[in-house]
Image 1 (cartoon, protein in one colour):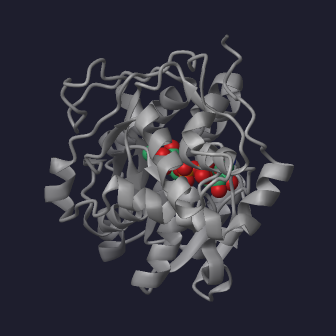
Image 2: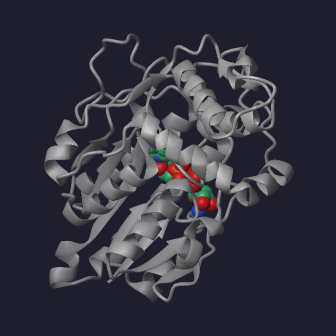
Length: 353
Ligand SMILES: NC(=O)c1ccc[n+]([C@@H]2O[C@H](COP(=O)([O-])OP(=O)(O)OC[C@H]3O[C@@H](n4cnc5c(N)ncnc54)[C@H](O)[C@@H]3O)[C@@H](O)[C@H]2O)c1
């Protein structure tokens, strides 16, 4: 059986590809354009495995995507390719609309054409799984507001979340209008190994190791619900196997932390794992001007998805963070060239200021 994964060289996509190859006998066709965020190294030995095939293609290119469906005839699609960094969406929204909205439409059309040509059992079993974010639900404005769930109204507030919301709507429209067997999962902030060092946890950790300032937006009170990428990948593969057309799966770990708590935990963990002769790293915490339009709190009630999928996030945040920071300490060979050549930790997302 062939599973077509998009964005399988990215942070979450690579965890999904590793898991599919390790736990199923599927062949994975991995469509990834290899943007700045891609890391083929994240697939390790699976990169050259006979059941893994990388196609360097743009999901916005209808001819390339239709050809991939015609040649590989997938039994299912897992769609993760996206522009994914909120700060970059503030500086340059056009690329987010192109990949996240137009790319999803191109993929849906190619997948629908392929699905319509299937017959019998293959057609009934076909699934299109669209991977999305909790950010489409907007911002919870207090600590005790009810967490998001499958029934929460959409209220995206950044160019990134608006582009993801648009793509979610397209996926549901294809299901409703054409009976196309698609479903959506929405998940909280991910962390773990191989995350590109523009995102909060690796950015702060690597700055801390280099003795650089640790930027905290505003007063650091914004709250996120942190899921380990391997817990997320497990849920995504289960959703592919058990997911029902038209469904929404809200995935989360119930591990809310303020940004300041996360940064302090990173400092304390690194101080323990690799003490800094200059003193505790919390001295490097620097409060910087807030992100424009910064959402206050995201939190998910995952109970519906837990029941439907027979899944629960396993890792507690501090244990997962310890494991993640040990990985960054052991894998300088991966992140040093990225920091030197592609992204040195400079402030992004200031265009609206
Ligand atoms: N990172 C998170 O915390 C988080 C949380 C919830 C949902 N999500 C969603 O999960 C998905 C994966 O996120 P991620 O953090 O792994 O992203 P990422 O930025 O690490 O990886 C995205 C991958 O998509 C590829 N890609 C980008 N544009 C493409 C195009 N036009 N054609 C083909 N490939 C293209 C890139 O090369 C890269 O490998 C995204 O859809 C994102 O919105 C992410």
